[in-house]
Length: 142
Image 1 (tube, rainbow, N blue to C red):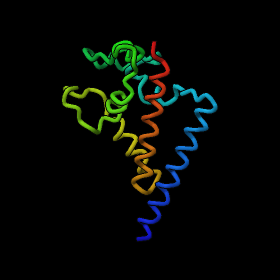
Image 2 (cartoon, helix red, strand yellow):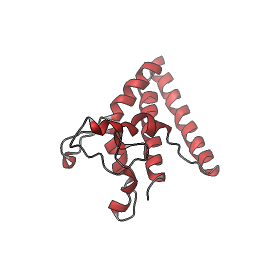
Image 3 (cartoon, one colour):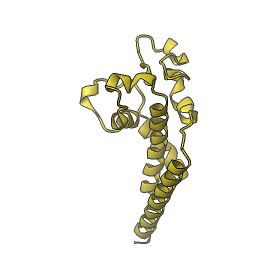
Image 4 (cartoon, rainbow, N blue to C red):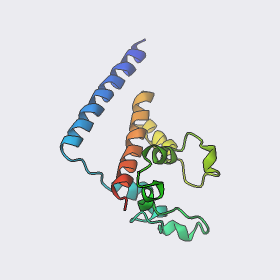
């Protein structure tokens, strides 16, 4: 019972903090930084996100794609939800075929598990890291 109450309180506090943080970020002209992208994605997608990361020499025949063209390839609209699902990767999307990209949702979840306790806080931490990537990708569309 105590654990349930504690978890609920933590989730409520995190929810409140997230809304306040989003409001503050919007009022301060929030701009995503490339740090999470460089840490998690640049080795395959390249620092410029155009698909020429150094690991592509090892994975011959795999095209990571130009991530600066996601909106252009989607009638000028950045496919926010689809990009989130692809990065998260834990929800299988049959239409995407074989999955060559690592499942970052699982990686972020495992990272969070070592640092935090209640599951909901860990899920929020993993989602936050994925959102950071999605917002960054949205900001670099050409």
